[in-house]
Length: 289
Image 1 (cartoon, one colour):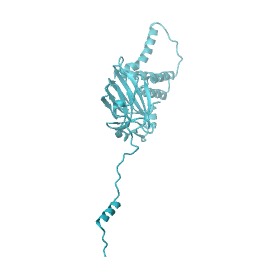
Image 2 (cartoon, rainbow, N blue to C red; image 1 turned 180 degrees about the horizontal axis):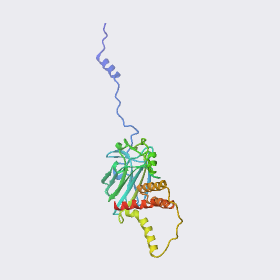
Image 3 (cartoon, one colour; image 1 turned 90 degrees about the horizontal axis):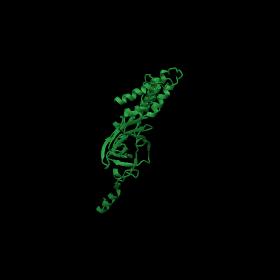
């Protein structure tokens, strides 16, 4: 004998046996934007001649840019009616923050964007570590924002192996070994410096300390002033000469002229006279370029 089940009871049974689809929810860990618009970002002053080291960490604020969410650092530039040069360096550690720069005018309107191509890899040289570095010319913009993008964070940078760097610094053939690869991330350490342009060209400004020394020596010679003779000194070994040249190149690449001048003086005291000539040639080539 067949058992008959009423239609209402059957519908109730099917409803109870059907799994309920959960409503989608926003993860509580989703990054929150600090601000609604670019004009409300927390800007800090970047004075002329200042060199700042800034850690981009988990505590750094985030903002949803057109390219996606990112931690950022925002700067207010001087209103001096002249051009500036910004040197931005992102230091390599276990990961590296691949920068992207947005410039705004006085009305907070975007004027230019510098993508990853503006910050190529700079191999370690001397005391300067591996980094991504670029120089930007500022023409009338008042605000500068350093950030990155989700696409950039998915990439990586191939470094030069330290053994290859050491071999090249000593004039040897670099070994055939794989280079390390460092992933891009949303944290890191950046350095930023603002220099005024105008008057002397960049190469001429760099050359002023050396020209001043040469001018003083020439004036003393014209007045009949004779410097006391220095003790005879042996020439430095070729390895020493190469070291100082490499260290001077690294200092110039990072924009640290003071260090380059100190290295040239140390090289002279060590008998590596060619290092000072090398520095002068580099600065003169900057003038001509």
